[in-house]
Image (cartoon, rainbow, N blue to C red; front, side, top):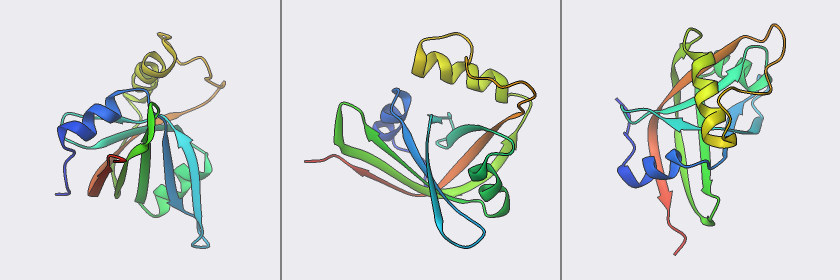
Length: 135
């Protein structure tokens, strides 16, 4: 069991703040990408991606991950979560990306789907959560 998110951190993740996901490439270098982020009721992070993307391949090989989420209204406040991907779900991934489109774009369905794209929802269990308040 990792370190669950506290309420203040969950609140920050509940707003449409973008996240930077850092994963390890096969050669050991770090890859960072900007993504949408969510939190579940168990205190885990929830991410969504498409099969075939580089960062998806990275976490399939090595589940360690760091997710950094700045507050869009005050970027000096941010959350840094280090953990690992503990669950993958294809069945609910399309519904989840639609919910994320509602959160981030105000649209009922994800408008950027590509033909043949297979979505995957990834659950990240936090090992370490640091919330910097910027003041």
